[in-house]
Image (cartoon, rainbow, N blue to C red; front, side, top):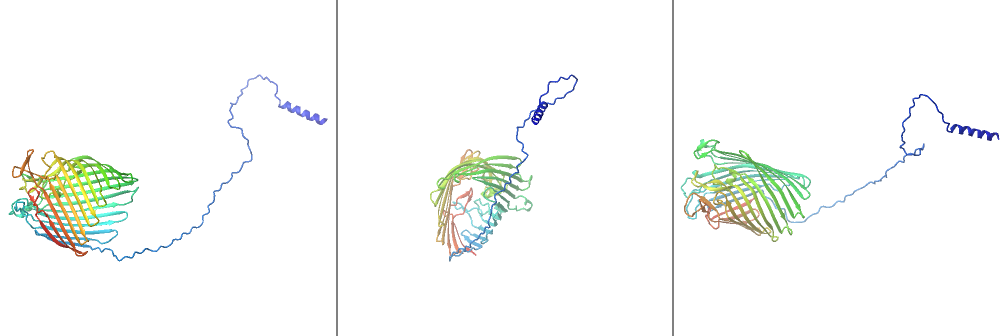
Length: 573
């Protein structure tokens, strides 16, 4: 009982302590601060004093056993044959003589088999001491000439690059024989051109795709004419310097080929002394010309390389006394049908042709040595056509083009500095249309025949005709090999529609737009050659030139040699 009373008493005291007390009012001055209220943002959670330890994670271990590779040996294949490699001979010589006292000598030297290097030399001499007559059997002034060419060349072929180089020298002596008087002293009409120079090229073959490849080409040529008879006038001759450097970059990516060409061409022409006068009609000429070319573009090939689209632009800067810039379109589209059996194409192109004394003399060697030079400007040349295969042995090509040409060089007989036996150059603007067709047939190495026909139509601005240019041209070539013992070759050239400017009325002279002109007649030139190979090292040849025996005028007052025969031997050693 006492225990029960004690417990009950303890419970009552405890309840009295924790119970809310009664209201108590206190009067007095007090400074009481109340803390600001705040909200508990944390969510309730159970706090456990025992923390779980992290479980370690171990990657899967891979067992790699030892690998052993054994290569089986394969015996080299052997080919049993009695044939031997064809022996190469480093030297080839050709010696002959013509019916009009025309000696010929030619020597080749080539390196034999090599994986990386080739080199050689070529020397050729041809001269003539015969007379030239026209169709009326009138003998012209002495027409002697001699030509000597020397060339050295070499090439290095490596996996990552190719290096090519050549040095050349040409000595060309001739007479201005375009005067129908055979008593003229040949020394008074003689001329001699000498040319020397070299060309070099470096090609970096770094790869086919995703690699930038490049090619660098450069060259120099110097040409001079014969010195005057009087030593005090030794400066009054022509000196012509030509230099060029070209760089090409290309990058292949998938079906596109991106390329960029950059080049510089320079021509320095000098006749006599600058700002000096030799006579009232003859003064010194100096011309320095540089052309900078930049040609970027892209070549795209689609449809299994059957469709080819080449788009680009050519920027040329002509620098003389002042600079001029020209922009030319460069585009071409072609598509191949049925494995190249029929390929239509269309395109447009243009360009700036640098005219030099060397380029003019290569076209007409009877030119004056003091001429004015103007670059040929071709704003556009639009062309279209189709080509393909008629069979495995026969191919064809047909195309049509229309071009506008400014400063086209035309040759006319000069009467101011000569007796009409030299040619000056006049420049005119013309529109030129050309239709061309060609056909080729080849039966292995036994028979080869190809023919080309061209038709021209000219529209000139100032001149009555495009002087000395043909309207119709046809060329044929053929070669036949019988048992590799007898060889026959044929070359033919036919031209018609050429007109020459004259300066007054005369026989067969006509007039057009106030200008006198004379038809030059048709050129028919056929050459036939035979060769008999005694063995692989020695052979004999016989050449027939101008089979039609036509003494046609290559230029006005310049008939060519008639029928000629040349024979000789060749040897390899």
